[in-house]
Image (cartoon, rainbow, N blue to C red):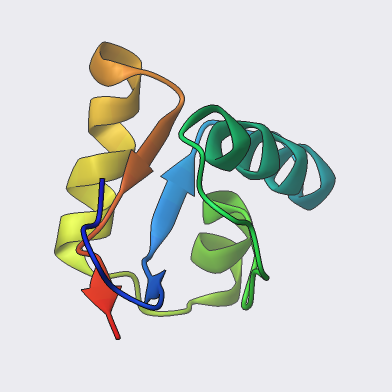
Length: 81
């Protein structure tokens, strides 16, 4: 899917109620797409980010809204190396 690259990183958003559920969902999704899951960083729920007043990019908010229509996991832009 990503061509001849060593790896990539990407922001993800998924419909999950907890960090644990999010991680499990992403691992399953990566396996289904035949991606090698390496690690996640800065995992938090959208609700937690909103409560803590953390800045959320407009494109991530739009992506979160689109989860209802397009499925449980959405990717941002892939950055390959």
